[in-house]
Image (cartoon, rainbow, N blue to C red; front, side, top):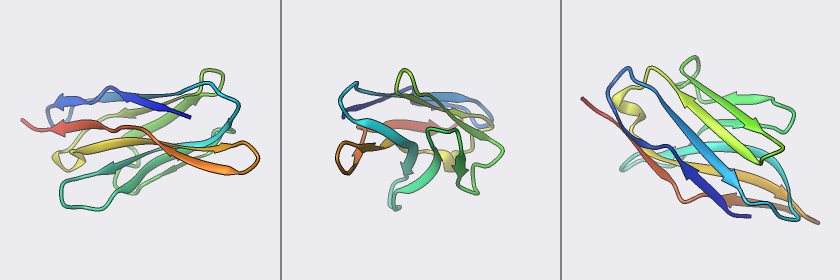
Length: 117
């Protein structure tokens, strides 16, 4: 499974961005998808995740500002980011659990989000 993330960029504080991630079509069944981020000098952390049934999980720091969604038919996952803060600056990575005989986990290449005036 290949994950292709897009949508990063430079935005002013208080602005919005929408990240997209496409999972390649394959024999694998895509299960939970999510977004992680890694800021300079920090560990990678979970931002948000969503199951195939639509159940979501958010990091406390983004609750109420970010919304994760997915299109199961297209194997897409999105992250709508509103009210962005400088501390949201990071490389954002798409992640997916996939099943084919056993569980696999895949990462996308990352997309940089910079929040700065």
